[in-house]
Length: 312
Image (cartoon, rainbow, N blue to C red; front, side, top):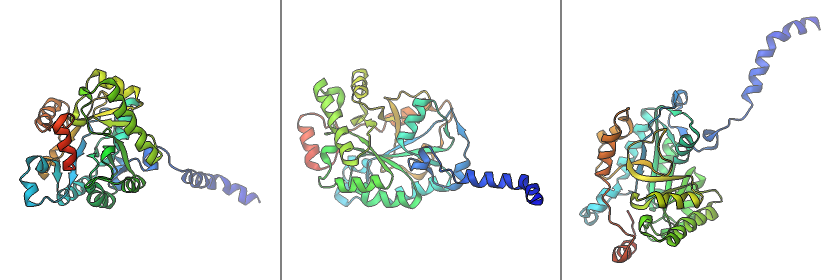
């Protein structure tokens, strides 16, 4: 008995370590909200002065000859091959890929983020996000966020609710892109509230989880819109340009960075890696030059947009 008691001080550190290892992890990464694409990214230093590129995609497909003659479709559509190369680059370079929800929460709560972080988002809810993007995201363990136009769900070329549910189960987050992809700055208060409330409610009913973010169609917002967005229960609003997200970013004007069909790998590397203090104005100018989109919120343009089965 004496000899065993003499060994107790030597055993205590081992017992303590085993006990600590059995405690489940906590925080967003433990629940699948974000994860490093490489295990060595876990040790990436966390910084309060972060600059996180939030990448914005639309379609992911191979265009036929007729579609390639359409400038808008060429701009909206990234080939699956190029998308796979871009995601592999993030893995090879040890980026930590976060959800849009993670980054907005860090801005709101003044929390640090890993120094080499990036976010992948998709707008509109095209069916190719399920057919082409999801297998690539799964291959590299990359989370993503899709901003969904709820009236288009189930239409030809768009996600079905069954596909949305399957992607949600695979750790793809969903936010609102309104019911009809309308420019909120052109709507009456009643119509704006309807678009915000109904899209949020529909996604929450289908997925049984809260919707906290909206992406503004055409990137358009103003002070009145942002007050209505906040009143509808959203905690973040996303633009379509503006450079990386920084600690002082406005939660209802969070910037993103467009990846288009013509984005080369050299340009992609600059998008995710070229954000040092002092680059904000140049990044914003470059992104603003890529944002010219037709306004589908009014009259004939809106009807043509619905008939074509795609929305920018």
